[in-house]
Image (tube, rainbow, N blue to C red; front, side):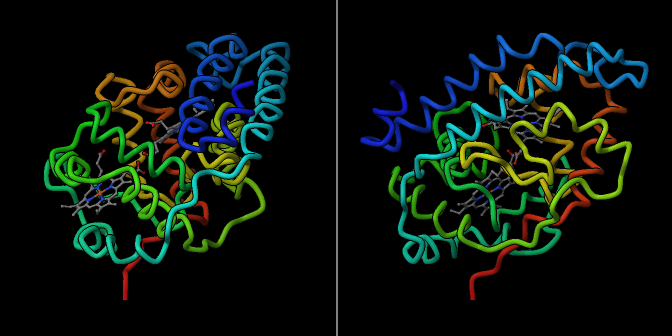
Length: 246
Ligand code: HEC
Ligand code: HEC
């Protein structure tokens, strides 16, 4: 019933789908507990994880079907001039703590809108981004998202060759995709993102600075070593790009 309403109001869809994801994650992920990255994980546990992922993948495919709100990419490209001073420079760093600013080229549209809304409503913390988002209308956000998400990216079919990473990422693929490209526009693509930014993001979910019920649950059981393996894996896959407006 949520999805019926979604097609009438695509902005509702973003919120409804996020709400449904929370429900799914809470009820269908009994297998995701501390130690799930342990290589000695039992076959039964693996099967439980596989079953949860299958259920989730079906839910994801269903959620992914209605189109996200359509922004105006041309207007977005103009608005994006302000953003390029940081996001348009390859390897540009946030001063403190030091990590590279995230790549936005090819990122999922509904996720970009959700991220900007997060800075505006305070569920995501970053002084500059909060200042940027404070003055943006929802339409500005949709247009910026249409521009950045419309940038084509190279992808691999699945996995790559980092077997340790592939193993560690089994619990993540239901949402972030077999190849690190998210399966719904609501969730971020991780493939090709800067390694130190991914690490910063996961640590913020782990310590509660960045508030998202789904990722809080996914990140809580991860050790520093798990995070290191996962971020190396995703950063090396083909995907997101730094974009410069000509
Ligand atoms: C002064 C540098 C700077 C400018 C200018 C800037 N950003 Fe950012 N942006 C950052 C940093 C640093 C982060 C990571 C913040 C964090 O840790 O949450 C970020 C994060 C983001 C994210 C979240 C990405 C993700 O993967 O979650 C989005 C979306 C974004 N910026 C969009 C924009 C847009 C759109 C503009 C222009 C209107 C803009 N930014 C201007 C530095 C900047
Ligand atoms: C049930 C779906 C789901 C699963 C499974 C999942 N994630 Fe996420 N992930 C999300 C959502 C939703 C967000 C965006 C949350 C937000 O708005 O902050 C996200 C955000 C992220 C981000 C931040 C990306 C950015 O651009 O800032 C990282 C990093 C991440 N996830 C890594 C992982 C890893 C590693 C795993 C596996 C251990 C995982 N996720 C499993 C749904 C999921």
